[in-house]
Image: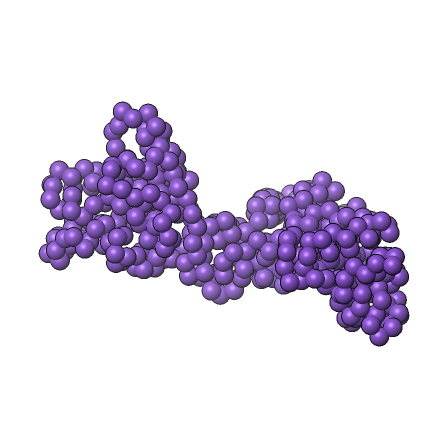
Length: 465
């Protein structure tokens, strides 16, 4: 996949802006820019030092396209490891188009999605997990996902894997050496030390694998389903959480017939709230479809908010009993899923009634979606459902499904090695399982890759990065 082409792409978003940055990378990057750039101080661009910036005009024949700043980064001290030139032009789409066409005519090729970062990986500037973190960093939309991407891009995850792989590789070499002296029946690898290493590797792998449960929801947002009977204020609560009129609110029961979703950031974490159709028996075909979707969203959600009408429950023993039955059904069907029971319209009942309700429903949260009372308490409760201990301690958190899969396979291979040692299997069989574990470690950092894998990973990047 190593390319000797010189590639070009717009590194800033398309459209009108103050500045548009065009990035060129490849062996002829500086050579291509030199003849079309006129420095205001008469400098020869090809003779300038790396990491310098020059002001001048971009010229197409007799025509001046723009006054621009040209930044030079010479190989290997650049993002891609190649010669890189970045042109900071004025942010007119017309100017950007004219400059791009000028270089395309002169032999540049339009960069593929993620090609600059791919070249950085192929030239040893980043390992594969760090390269993937670049895409995560660009996509991060809250403090938590930004922190995780930064930690991974700095090499935190890579370093943990590299240390484990190097230690395992050292013992693998000793066991392979034993095979060369099999007739002498000697042991170069201390079996007790090796067992201790395998235990430590498994502990680290398990911690990383377990972190995926937190990492995945942080990266993609924590889905929260708001459920309950019709007209208890689910849409009003969604609007209060989002601080905007996102869902239609009316006195008519069954107003919401389809799910409505939107995201907000709470305490640096992304939460995706899902307003669902009210649960009730209905003959309305459309409303019935919406209610079926409600149960589907409960399945998909990480957290369920069960909303009830304080007035209705306080004034009817039957309504209270039906509510308790429904809550128990949800708990029994989803025992591992956090369920928060919320009494809405708390501003319409007395403090005595509130006390009575709380005595009948443990951990009940009182709110008024209409006035906003208790909404901040709800947000704090939601944060408690997410284990952010690892995040606060700046520990490595796995967010990538490919990494999670490779870690799981590495764990299984290490477990086979450990079991093989207990059973006393021969060194040649032991070596096979060790090599398999090393292979999966290498998959994560990119020491072992295929063109198809790289193509799939970098296809998800934006053009210009």
